[in-house]
Length: 197
Image 1 (cartoon, rainbow, N blue to C red):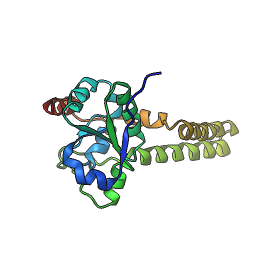
Image 2 (tube, rainbow, N blue to C red):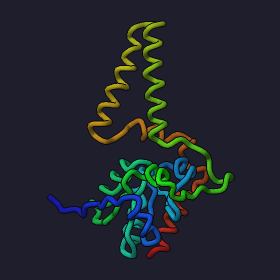
Image 3 (cartoon, helix red, strand yellow):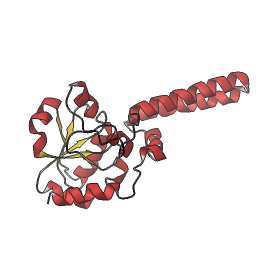
Image 4 (cartoon, one colour):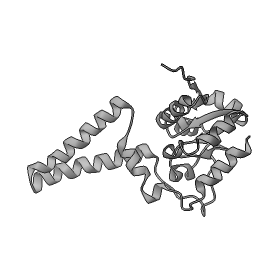
């Protein structure tokens, strides 16, 4: 079994004290990133991390990589993926949510560039709750078989918690409002990573 580097988890105070030392990679969706991110963070959504591996690996040779997301779960997944490639990373405990809760600055792009988008966790809660209610209402008004929808969502939430993954977040992340408006959004982040080399 291969020995991969273990990502280090840092608290908000530790990150704040050394923020300018890190190459910060935000793995949230472009919409979430646009609603506010750590100063200097580059947006490489989780589903694009594999594509960005060469640039991240190159940048990691010249500085420490800090991976962040909304609460820490996606950053942990990205860090595991990077560790499998031998890239040492750190993550921010509690993610940008913990950063903002401490009152630390978040960079928000000008209104022309950013779209206000709910955090992915909030989108998942809203969607799951809506589908459960829909299944119950349709099961009561139309046919009891619609209650299977509610049961399926409940099962999916349990599976999500046990595996620390979220298929619904992956699907929601592909919706247009969670995607960048311009095709070169990721290319801009990759160019910035190359500049660290």
